[in-house]
Figure 1: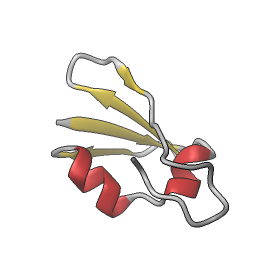
Figure 2 (figure 1 turned 180 degrees about the horizontal axis):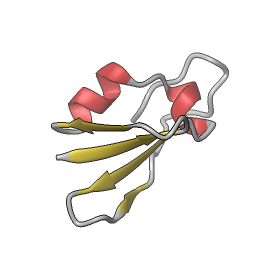
Figure 3 (figure 1 turned 90 degrees about the horizontal axis):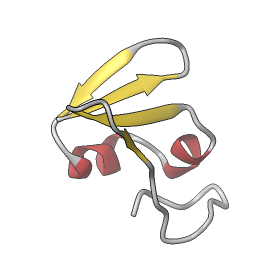
Figure 4 (figure 1 turned 135 degrees about the vertical axis):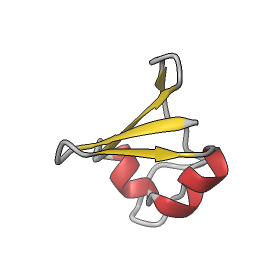
Length: 59
């Protein structure tokens, strides 16, 4: 389970990394729109295959 804090103050709960890859665009994640935490409250730092040029996705 992953907790996603959105910059507008909302909280979303998703099942796993695969769901995160489907739901969130890399450019938004890279710019800090979404912050990810595991069920223990540890920050999950996103890693990218390449820097965003508006086209990258979560790695």
